[in-house]
Length: 307
Image (cartoon, rainbow, N blue to C red):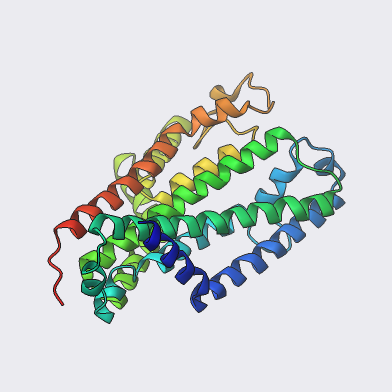
């Protein structure tokens, strides 16, 4: 597995498509950080805030999306790009049977390929985190505190798990279809449905269940139903986790009634309390990765591979 891991890792970092996607991610991320930093420097209240470096990830400036939102949109493309031809590419080139004719076990092959893709995602996400810290120190003039570092580190881990789901899904489609183009189109189609059409479907279903939101309670119930249905999408799970992690004052997911917010002080939550709020989202994301890779593992171990 060690040989497969390093070989696949070298292939990822030497491929042109990865270098192009890396350049797009870094340049766009650097511009988003710079725009957010300039906006924070001009805002005295933001500069005096306790969590300035978290604002670099969540604030929108210059007509750009926030860096966290941008990574949530671009992350699935990175995972799909790394995984859609993992097995189907070997089938197309006719090299899979040659590789398995060597003293390499099947489980070592698929484990090495998946771990190499996950390591590539981890290196890319960690590089973005270091870019945020470095540019933030230059723009703001002081380093992040311990609370900000821990929240950004956990944000990085959540992002790796999130992109790891799309990597595992693309690997599964690569095994199911055994054609590179079909695996890529299937992965992209599912990403578009979960990211764009799933919220619309959730709103329609919630409208049927709670058709007359004439009172605030009914409106909140409709919003809760839509949010519950929309959580089938990993993008929603990632967005909710990031919202709680990078906004220490956030303590409610979804719509809250006025009675529920009375007496609540907008003091920052402790990191442990924020993690308790998003524990279901994190558990679901990790379970989705495990299920997708588990199905891929069983499928590959039982597949008939001929020369």
